[in-house]
Image (cartoon, rainbow, N blue to C red; front, side):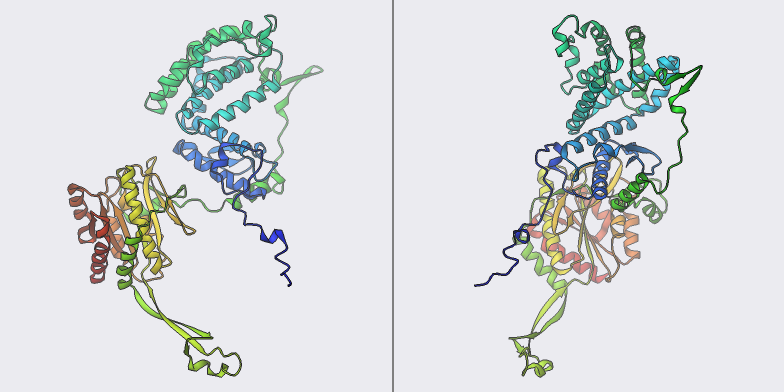
Length: 576
C-alpha cells in the first residue's frame, strides 16, 4: 500500500496558526493582542492601531498617536526603538509602550505642557534653576496622571511603565544626592495604587540603608516629607474638580506652595546630563553649547522615512467620519452631533433562538423571490436533453433542479446600543432578537449587514457586529442619536438592489442630536425602506416612537411575536 507523499510530511499536517505565542514573555497584553505579525512594518502598524484605540478611551483631545518619524500635526510621537528587535513584539514590551501611551495621553488631556509654561512664568527662575523646577513639575504631573490611571483598568500598564522608568534611572544614577533619584523614589511611593504609602515616614530599605554612613535618609527624608504634603490633594482632591482649567490652576498653586521649601534642599544638587548648566564645554577661551550643532535636513530616502512610509501604508484606512455628510443631509442643523465609525468590538456569545429562527425563515421565505437553480452534468438525476451527446463518452447527461429563495433587497439591521439598553437582561434579550433575526436574513441575502450605535465621549459610534462569520458586541452606553445613526447606516448601502431595507431595533425615541425627521425623509428620497422594531418599550416610549415613525414601527413585547410583526412590517413596505 502506497501513501501519498504529503501524508508523511508533518509540516503539511500542522494546524493553521491562529496566533503567535512567544514562550517566556508574559504580559497583560498577551490576553487581548491577536493581530500579530512576524513582519516588522505590519507588526508595528498593528500595535500602533491598538495604541490609538487605547488612547481614545483617555480623552478626545489626545491627538494622533504615531511612531517617531511619521508625519503628524498634533498628538503623541512614540519611540519605536522601545519595541523593535523581535517580531511579533513580546507582551512585556507591549505593556510598557501601552503604559507610556496612557501616561502621555493623560498629560495631553490635562494640558500639562500649557500649565507648565504658566508655572515657569510665575516662578521667574534663571535657566539653571528653571530646569530643576521643570523636573519637579514634570514628576508631580506624572504622579497626578498615574493617579488618574489608577482609577481604571489601565493601571496595570502605567505601573509597569513606571517600574521600568525607575529601573532605568538607577542605571544612570550618579553619586547621591541627586534630584532625579529623589523624584523617582517619590514617584514610586506617591503614585502607588493603594494611595496610602505616602503617609508613611520614608525609610531607606535599600542595601545602602543598612549603614548609617551610606543611608539616603540623611539626604531625602526631609524633602520626602515636603513632597508628600501635597499628595492627598493631588491624587484625591484635584481629580474631583470640574474643568481642565480649574484643575490646572489648582495643581500650579499646589506645586508652588512647596517649591520654596523644597528648593532650599535641592538647590545645589546634581540633576542629569540634560541640565543646561552642564551642556556647555569649555574649549580654550570659548564655550561650545552641545545643542548648537546644526541639524541636517532629513534625507527622503533615509531608513527612518522609509520605515514611516511602510508603517503608514500597513495601517490602511481610518474609521470613517460621517459627520460632515450627515450635517449636509440635516440641512446643517447646529444640534447635529459627531458621527464616526468604530472597530472596537468584543466577541459575543451565541444567543440565536433556534425555534424563533425557524419561524422567521418562513416569514422571510414568503417575502423572498424564488428562482430555479439547475445543476447539470451529473451522473444521476433527471435526463438533460442538452447533454445527451455525452452519453457515449462520460455519461454525464443528468441534472437536478431546486428552488432558491433570495431577498432582492439589501438589508441592514441597526441596533440601539445606548444607555437605556445597559441592563444585562435587556441587552441579552436584544442580542437574542438581533442575532436570530440577522441569522434568518443572512440565509436569504448574503449582503445583509449588522450594525449597532452608541455614544462614546459625545460621539455617536457606528460599529459593525457581524464580521467573518462571527457575532460581536459592544457595551451599551450613552444617549440615543437615532437620526444620525440611521443616516450614517444608510451610507453603507451599496445600492445594487432595488429598495433596500434598514430594520431599526430600539427601545425608545431619539433624545440627542438632530432627531429622526431628516433621516426618514432621506430614506424616502433614496427609496430605502425604514422599518422600526420597538423592544421592551414603556407606554410613553411607544407613543413617542409612533409620533416619530408612524406606521413604520411595531413593538416586540414577546419574542414569540417577532415573526408576525416582521411580516406586518414587510407587507406595509410593499404597499408603499
